[in-house]
Length: 383
Image (cartoon, rainbow, N blue to C red; front, side, top):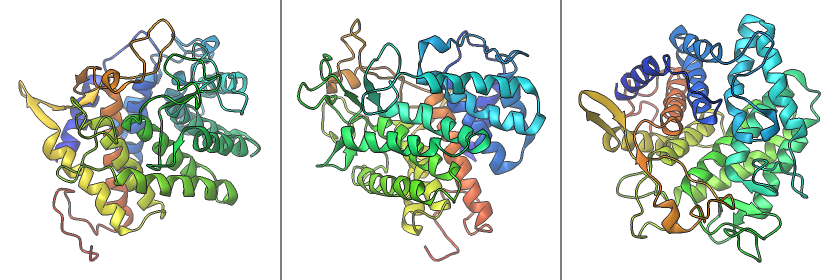
């Protein structure tokens, strides 16, 4: 199985990394590891999580290379696995560390409409990325240690994204919004960035389905809002799927733009979110097939063997908007298509683990109605 072989090899190398910063990219891998652990019950994945976290989290809960005063939502996602570690071990350092991260969210600067600034250096800005960086952790904390009042705040921030970043014409969302409507990348009338970027849509779609899963069923009104936003976006995204390959372009609605390409990380994000939505009962069997179609396309078109090593290719290394001293990041089509395309970047590799884990969970929960390999498109349940 290509996905399993790739994931095992990737984690063997990940176990030896000690980067000099606490970052959301590795957070994607950690969340992917937890998803694989839940799906397989293989302690290999749990041990990799603990090995990583114990290189950063000190006995007093301090996190190496983390600075709360940055008020950077990108520093939050790695903390999602702290809930698992604290539940499994009861070690106080994990609880202390997640409290430090929650303290940041409590104090995070906000726009006038009530959404978190993406970062302190990005004042009055809402990015779709930020919904994934902050909201699932916030929801996990509320579920484990809160009193339920935070759910309304979480949903409000999703609704703000719909209000300020939504494009009526396509049913999709722009990457960013400047509340002051003053930044060089923002439209002076709408405050919106110039383009719809597939990975930003992926972040947002994953945030919606993750928060829906986390919120208890007693929060029926909040879950109903997330469900509607999620279902509508899934349909809009699938209208942009490349019919020949089953994958998605870097610039979602501009397939014929010179230099545009089929991008791996966003495609795997969509596969994850769609398969998870099916597993949770928000989507029907048709969508399960679409999720698998994307996995098949990734397996057949984006895995490559280089010098004897299996790699997952075709990932945009990163893209953003500004700040003022980086005017190259202006949100133009040319900018998004100028960023490097690489293999095995955490935002693609980690989410590949999440997507594959959803296929494993579906197979397990549906009593093996799928064949043993997702590329074999034969279903025992009539699809």
